[in-house]
Every structure is written in structure tokens, then in C-alpha cells.
Image 1 (cartoon, rainbow, N blue to C red):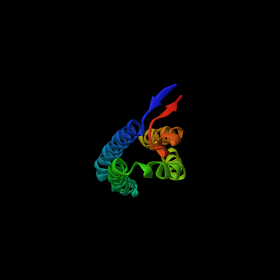
Image 2 (cartoon, rainbow, N blue to C red):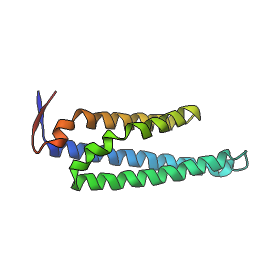
Image 3 (cartoon, rainbow, N blue to C red):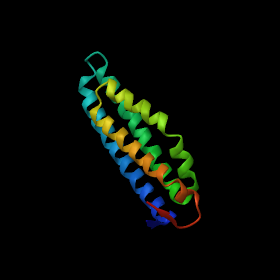
Image 4 (cartoon, rainbow, N blue to C red):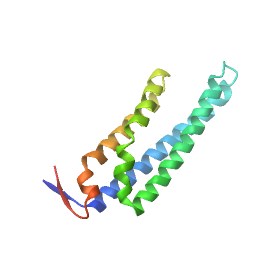
Length: 132
């Protein structure tokens, strides 16, 4: 059994959220750059640019959540508890439309959510908790 503090878990969640936000932001840049020359091809380019804009917004929101969670760790559990459906919609969208990199991003989001779910007791406690 390993003893983990709430502070350790919060620090790791915030770090992983920042990494995730950077990943989605870089993906958004690639989508917008590659989408620009493809605008002439039946709207495919426009769709790529719009997905890029969406990913910029989502990555910015993720960074804001990470900063908030650092100050108010009690909000981490409710946020991740309700994150499964949106991530699954994103995953299905990426699978259907061939967004292989987006699939990896969604899988990372699900793994991060799983990390939080497994540490529910630590996040909802006031101190150190034994952890498998």
C-alpha cells in the first residue's frame, strides 16, 4: 500500500490537464494550417478549421480548469465524474471522421478521468489516504 496525499494527486491532475491542453492546442494549430489550403475541396477545409477553432477553445477551457483546480481541488471530482459522455462523443466523432490523432487525445482524456475516479477517496478527503 502506498500513501498518497491530496496535494500530490491534485498536483498530478493539474499537470496532466496542462499537458492535455497543450496537446489539443497543437492539434488545433495543425488542423487550421492544413485546413486552409483545403477550403476549395467541398468544405473539408472549412470543417478542419472549425474543428481547430473548437480545439483552441477547449484547450483554453482546460487550462482555466487546471488553474481553478489548483486553488479549489474539491471541484476536481465533480468535473471528472461528469466528463465521460462528452469525451465519448468526441471519440466517436474522431473515429467516424478519421481523426486518428483526436482518438489518441480522447483516450488520454479517458485515462486522466480514470486516474481521478480511482483516487476519489483521496480527492474527497482532507489528508493522506492509503492507495493500492
